[in-house]
Length: 606
Image 1 (tube, rainbow, N blue to C red):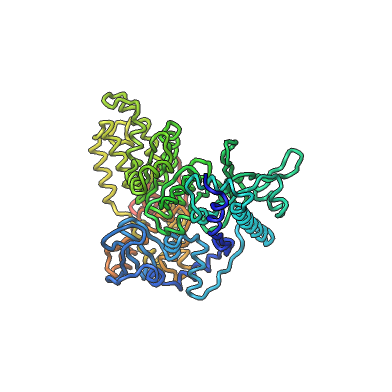
Image 2 (cartoon, rainbow, N blue to C red; image 1 turned 90 degrees about the vertical axis):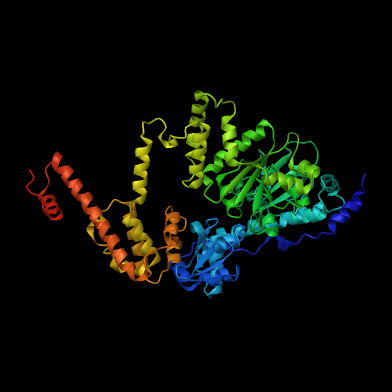
């Protein structure tokens, strides 16, 4: 048996620095839109990106190899006139603010602060959700308490009297001092009042570090457990996990939901991962704290873990912000397979183009720790890279128990798969999943969305082609005005035909026009920022990024033509409405006059 005193000394050679917790932070708050507009007008996106990703000029654009995916030839372009960037390889794109959020892993407020510092502006801000100054100060106090408690637990891990058994356990699991330091591991000593004797009882209650008995008396939540501080991506300690040293139950215990800690939005190990790999190609999602730590001990530092909850949409959106490929690792037993399928169902709406998800089922009786010990780092990473693609897992899972050689089996597969594929965002991946379903169900000549209806496929396809070829004047007008805001002077926003139009496209056109009139110097990037977080954001971005084939001298004429076609279409809709009404009821005198003006050749109508 190893000498415990020597083990504690070895661990204590690694110092835990309070700086690791990243205490310097700013409370997010509401930033006035006028300030964002002003900032976007002053910032040059070329300068912002060039300082991080060296650019080369190519015609009107600047190009580089994309920082968000691996590529051999440049497909990443930055346009100074539009103040936008776009990668034709992976689809990444947006404004200077969006670039900093994705490249430097900043939140919106942090990105705005960074850009404001570049141009010498001070960010005016009110606190979010109308919080008072006192409430904000209270959150500061709670974060500081969590930091102090983490440091206290870390100190106790190396205490010769209290931490001996905890260190022995970690050594048996192969965890060395360097890994313990990186993850801020600690130890909660036995005793009901260890924390209450040192810290504010009220603050301990707020953070869930104490629990109240039925008589109202508080006691420490974590006792005689190895402690895993849970840090958010900015390094702040938001909660704790604890593991017993024996066979007591529960084996693992987490902090409860608090004002600082939401399990469905936090991932253990994400801060540590980003500290070592700011731009990971792939992120591995495992099930527990020790899985993350054991893999890190073997040099695999791209793993995170959910906190005792199933993977959520918030988890997926957060992780896809940092990596284009996620691999979910589950036990190979029936419970693991069910958990993997739940993850697939939750992931479907998040699988936009450029995102990849794989499922890795471990051999039975294995966990990540045992597998990496047996296969080594290279073998384990090879297994991760070869994990089953979501598309394959999807159809394999749904086909289990079905005989696809029989019509009934094919029909059952379609019935199961069709509503799930319908959750996928529109795009190439969804279309390919539909093609795969048709192949498996032997329905190559039937559109999945038209199953159960009598449809002439050739006629349907011809109509679809005609629809694609038909030019949309609203889309053209929006594209032109997004990229050339001064065109707004050609729009008569008071025109009744535009004001009364029911088309969402026309309402959006008027909204963009109003924004430009408020900020005549606004750039396409500035307009895109106005739509951040709205349902129209993706559509607006695509319009702003569209490459126009209209020569500069013809842009105004093209825009006038689009507006003219929009108004003609609205006239036609109004004429059709009035004629239909005339067939079932009498028109008022005003409506008859309106119809006469819209339709000069109109005769008497009774």
